[in-house]
Amino acid sequence: MKILLAYFSATQNTARIAETIRDRLIELGAEVDMLDITTPEARETAPVMNNYQAVVIGSPIYYRRAPKIVRNWLGRLKGQDTPCALFFTFGGFGVHPAHFSAAGILAPNGFSLVASAEFPGKHTYNLVGWQAMADRPATSDFDVAREYADLIHDRFSGEERLDWAALPLGPCSVEELDQRETSVPKLLPRRPGRDGAECGMCMLCEELCPSGAMDATSGEARADLCVFCLRCMDVCPEKVIGFLDLSELFTKKMEMDGETQDSLRAKTSKIYK
Image (cartoon, rainbow, N blue to C red; front, side, top):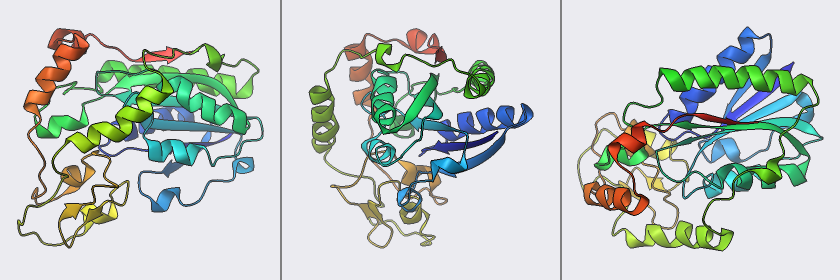
């Protein structure tokens, strides 16, 4: 069986789960092609699905869904009743309707959803003062990833499918999620950047920026394109790219969501089947 495993991963949480699933699928006898769709160049073309017997797609969750740039890419994929499995990583907060949302894009385009899964991972904003899921994914999460690989491998070869329409919708309407996705970033007074700091101009921040927002020469990200994934900070070898200190925002987020460090630690990976 030849499987395409496509994933978006700005700060490597999703990549680590993708690699675990890949390794287990190979152990089970599958041939797996990995496709990292994190950069704009990687998303310029859509893979031809008739080259594969199944596809696995992984994404982080931003504002309770896959990032808009990922959703747009999903909408360009064309399946031919291709079996498809989804997985998501999240930093401890709202998950739904990420599964339902992605399935609702893929199912009308000819994909047959067999299962979906979610895995906790350290929050991107831990780079700027948050303290969410700092030690995740952990061994228990990778164990679930291998279990998930076993499940989807069996289902890719069989007839059993997931009733994606029954996946949780979450507390927010699509309109509310769209509004948050566009309005919340506008509340932040700046974007990631060097603030005039000298650097060796390795260009990684620009080359690896998922949205094409970062300009290495000016050292600033474009406000209209930045998705606040903070990959530029994560990959900068000299650590000269900075952003806001969001420690106070973390405290407010914990209060708003009724979370504590104990409740965050108690969150587990989950398979929808």
